[in-house]
Image (cartoon, rainbow over all chains, first blue to last red; front, side, top):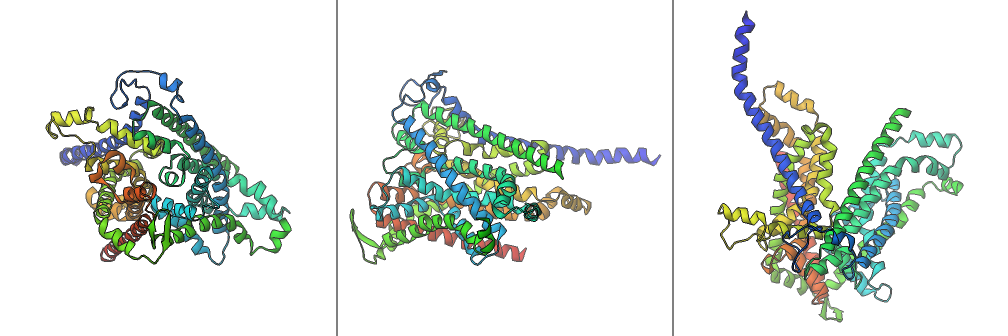
Length: 287
Length: 285
C-alpha cells in the first residue's frame, strides 16, 4: 500500500506548485490578451468614430451614431481625388515593383554570379534606411534635375517602386529557397526551353509568393506618408490628404476610408492565407 | 528567345537583375550622392552653390543636438516598451496558442492595415482629456485634475511604440517559433525550474529575434516625425520634424541634407555600438 502513502504526499507538494503554475500560466495569457486588446483598441476607435455624429468640427468625443459619413464618404473636398491617386499609384507601383523584385529574387536564389553579395546589400540597404532619409535624398535628386522630373504623380510612383522592391525581393526569396528545382529540370528534360519552363512550371509555383508580395507592396504603398509627402509636390494621396486635414480638423470621412481600406486588407489577407493553405494541401496530395 | 538564354546562360542573372538594380541605383544610390552634394552647398533658396560647406555638418549637430538626443531617447524608450509588450505575447502565441496561432499573428499585423496617420490620430481620441482613459487616471489620482496625457512625451513615445510594434513582434515570433519544444522538456528533465529553463534555453535561443526586432524598431523610430507632430508639442520635436520642415517649409535644403546625413551616420554608430554590446555579451555568455 505504498501508493496510498505516496499519492497524498505528491498532491500536497504538487498543490502549491500546481496552483502557482496555474496563476503563472493565466498571468501570461491575461497579459497576452491585454496586449492584443491594446493593439486592437485604436482600430476599434477608427471604425467606431467613422459612425460618430460630431457636433462641432472635432471628431474626438462620441456624440451619436450615424451612417451619413459612409454614404457621403466623398463629400469632403479633395478626398475622392486623393483616394483615387492612392489606388492608382499603389496598383502601378505594385505591378512594376513585383516584376522587378521577383526577377532580382530569381537571380539571387538561382544563380551564382559575381556581385551577388553586393546585390544582396543593395536590396537590404533601403529597408534599413530611415524613411525620411530615403525621401529626402530622392527629393534632392528631383530638385537638382527639375528639367527631367517635375514633382507629382510620377515622382510618387518612382519613389514607391524604389522602396517596395526590397520587400518584394525578401518575400519572394523566402519562398524560392524552399523550392524543388527538380520540377524545372524535369520540364527541361522533356524538351521545354527556359521560357516555356518558366511559364509553365516556375511561374505557377511562385505565383502565391508573388501575390503575397504584391499585397504587401500595395499595403506599403497605400500607407506611405513620409516619402510620398516629400516627393508629392502638390499631388495628394490619401495619407497626404489626412496630414493636411489633421492641421485643421479631421472629418469622419477619413475614418470611413481608413476603415474600408482596413476591411479590404483583412479580407485579402485571409483569402491569401486560405489560398496558400489550399495550394500547400494540393501539392502535398500530388507527391 | 529560348536558345538565346541557352547560349548566354552566364548573362541570365545579370539580365534578371538589370531593371530592378538599375531602379535602385538611379533612385536610391544616386540620390544619396545628390544628398551629399546638397549638404555641402551654401546660399539661400533658390540660389545654392557647391562650396564644400563642411560647417553645415558641425552646425547641424550643434544647433540640433537636443532634437538628435530626443530622437534617440524616444526611439530607445519605444524599442524597450515594444520588447516588453511583444515578448510575452509572442511567447504565448508560439507556445500556448495552438491552433489559434495564425489568428493572433493576424492581430499583430492588423494595425498595419489602418493608414499610419489615421491610427496615430486614433490615439488623439483615446488619450483626449475628455476621454475615458484620462478620466479614469484622474479618478484614481494618477493624474491631477488639470493634467492630461495628450501633447506629452508619454503620448509621443506611446505612439511610436504602437506604430512600430509589429517590427519587434514578427522577428521575435520567427525566432521563438523555431525553438524545439524538446529542448525545454530536456531542461525540465534535468531538474531546471521553468524560470531557469526560460533564462537558460528560451531566452538565449530567441536572441537573434531580439536583435533583429530591436534594429527594425529602432531605425525607423529614430527617423519618425509623425508621432511627434500629431501627439506632441514643439517640446517633443524630433530630428525628423526638423528635416521635414527644413525641406518643405523653410526651403533650407543644405541644412536639411546635412541633418539627414548626420541622422544616418548617428544610426550607423548606434548600430555598431549595439553590435559590439550584443557581440561581447555573446562572447562572455
